[in-house]
Length: 336
Image (tube, rainbow, N blue to C red; front, side, top):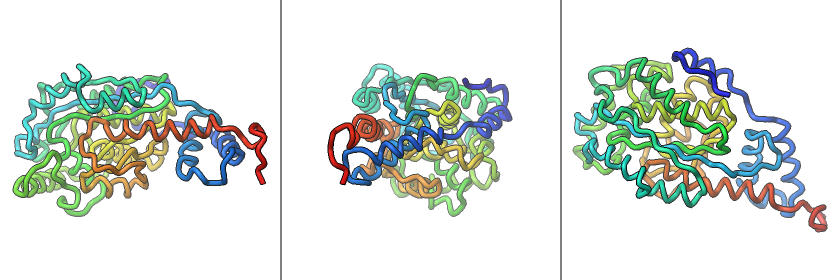
């Protein structure tokens, strides 16, 4: 049961009090894994994934039957600085495409047997340009966090969150720079394909935003430099933590949202694995900071939750092998 989010302190408190994995279920899963009809460790990381999943679901022999994909959309005032190769009108158009089933994420969610939900967050009212002012007020941040919080189906047994928001690799780069330090150029990439001049401009914008909004606090960094869809992803990931629903992280923007939670609590992402490493250069660096090894690396840079959705079937396969394989005793096979 999720508590009400009446203010940001309630969000902090709920995340701090979130339960950990079920140690008994994880131990049972580990013991079962040692009895399956295969040499020890023969399924590599799939074995670790199944045990991890079992712990979070509280079931030593779990199933994945109800994965959920949620796409959040938001617009950014910082696009007025010319940081994207596409106009912000594309955000609205892509939301319609999601709703009509025509985007890549629709196909990938369907292939993974996942339900898909789309939430557009006040697209007619972009966040403020963070080179001039905080991107969001505290009330706007809370509203966005609450949207993500309430979007998670408590009956889901796996969650992927994705985003749509023209220009949102710029806020993601600014968040990463604010969280982890270094130069803006270390965290700023080409996004949807800006040229060299565009990349230089984008790096300038990130540097100006980070310099204007100095903070060590994850929520304050999210408020000042983020966007509504980024905050909604953070809210959904946090809700899943409380509900013990495992999460597959998507690309750079999703991982930046998750990193804000990690700054609040170093156990906030224990229920999450990285679905993939995208082609956005800084994504791998953020994953390394979070200690997350990606399941896939296919050169994706689409967003939408596409890489996370693609990885659902990897986790499904891990759990299917763990729960469906016979033990040596069940199969009547000598275990040596």
